[in-house]
Length: 152
Length: 248
Image (tube, rainbow over all chains, first blue to last red; front, top):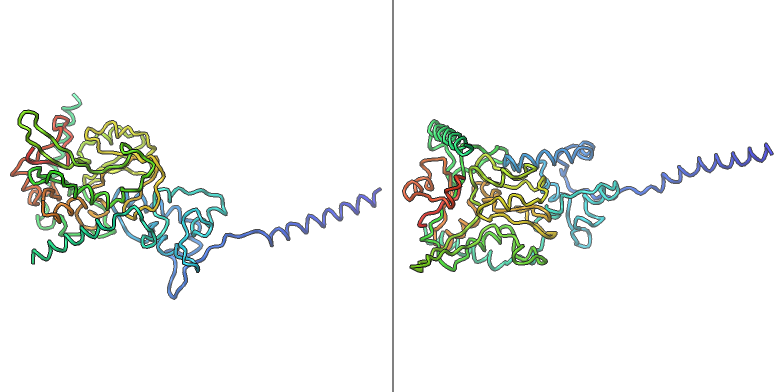
């Protein structure tokens, strides 16, 4: 009886010891791709920005909205310009894609962010605004140019 | 009683503002587009941005300013599910016809950027606010979409976003559940540029809209307003609007 009990508890201990190790090896990590290139680095040290990016963004947000301070360093648009780029297939990820730089970690950590309900999730050059009447913008440009020409 | 208190405060403040602008050298003051503010510098209460609209020059049937605004903020087509009444409008053309004489006046109506904005008074969260340079804005980060401000505004200047918005422009973060209105193109003004509607009106050679610093007595807009009056719409409300009209 005692022997049997010992054997079972030994097996159990073994199993307990075994599983966490296996588990650790299998834990999925968020896959983020960092911008490459010589001299390309984040506006803050990586460990700092990983921990504190939300505070920087919040601070910058109030500075911009209330005081009109539009420096690039901690602005969301600046993050997006660098971190959201087309993948190998030439597709630019949108904010709810797993591939999107912000979403890759936020989905992993189960932290929902509302930024992109209002803010652009891609650099402006990758936003195809079908709604935008291109002709109108062209007209306006031409009119302004014609006026400037006339003034000279 | 409340009016009296407000009036005296207002008078004191406006005198203080004038005194402030005299002590500074006139050339140093921000003129229209002459001096762009550095990105890292906060806006200052030395200036108060305003607009003067000449209804005599505003062409009937022309919607240049409205089109330019829609373009700048990407308003057209961004709300396919909303009804016409729900769709956002920052600026609209209004026609006034004198019943007897049938004389027609056409003018653009937009947020009047009041010195004493009722929208700010009623906002329960502080989202509706006036920037120190006189531009009335909504901090959409803390707007809860209650729409009190829309009811308080005598000019019907504000809109509520009824549906999710996608593909926003950098200039105009907009989203469902918040109130929005004319920002006097704050993103342009901070760069030293003029609002899109004024630019379009000028490009059309109508020159019915003038933008500038109404705190500076030497600015073009101040001189024009001194000459022509610079009427307020609903002046009886004593809101001291930043958008003024002539030819009404």
